[in-house]
Length: 216
Image (cartoon, rainbow, N blue to C red):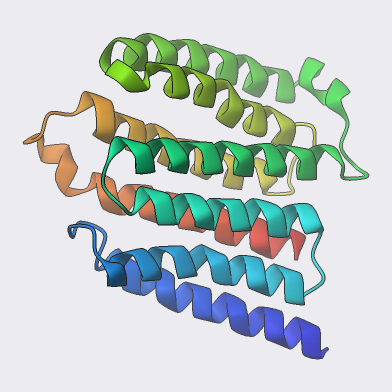
């Protein structure tokens, strides 16, 4: 009971940090912004550990928190480090899904999961076609990242429908796609830039909170 209560407390702290970061989302990089963004997911990792959740969940959340820290800073080096941390987080989530007792990869060949898998494949091709010509020196990391995030989505489809895992995975993938569009596609003065930072954060943190709630 104490471990569970501590986990819930950490989750509540994460929610407060997430709400605090929402007001800082469009602000320039700074220490407070980095701390709020990182703590919003790091506390979920801490809470999952306290609640006795699977170690792969703790690892995935921890890697995503590290990615948040990197992406809250400026520069290509920080961006590449963030992409690497998030790619590792996606792989940890995929491993979490595939090692569940009710995971069955054969579902990917059966309806309705097969439609979802086909959709992910088509989405990956579109993303590669749109982003590759625009990513410049970051083309390599971007093209490696695309199958990693979609592989996480495919791994979620191996679980029974109705578990909400795929919904959380879709929110995570959509946040990545909006961030990619913001980084490589939208012009500096595009009107959508007024809302994209908030959309990315709400979808991304909602996905992490969803995984935390489902598996903790």
